[in-house]
Image 1: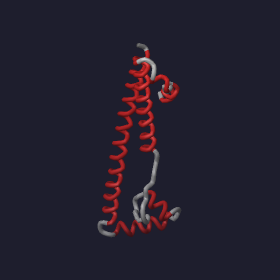
Image 2: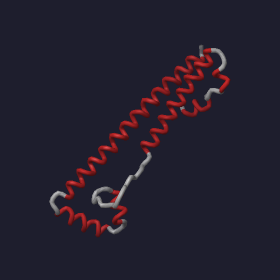
Image 3: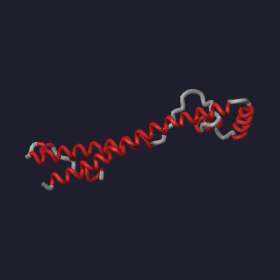
Image 4: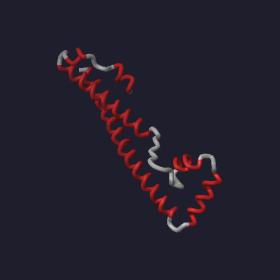
Length: 135
């Protein structure tokens, strides 16, 4: 759909013809903006990113484990077992990771919902542009 819309980008002169041409150009331009914004939001939301600030001190977050221990599996296992023997340290890290994952999931959910609404609006506007053009 994006390719079709890009090929249909109105020229500046389309806005100065009669009212039907101007309405068609405006509606088509809005459709292009909605679908383009939907694509950008989708790509930014789905592209993997790591935001690890500070020292890698988590024993359950994959990026911290990989940065801190690299290929030293035995050292990781020893430290994790030692940490597990302490009272609530593992539970605290699990709960902290659940909270962090929940925040990320909620933000991604909201962004995907917005992208879907924009895509729907773009599709409706594209259909409306076709109808206006056929008048």
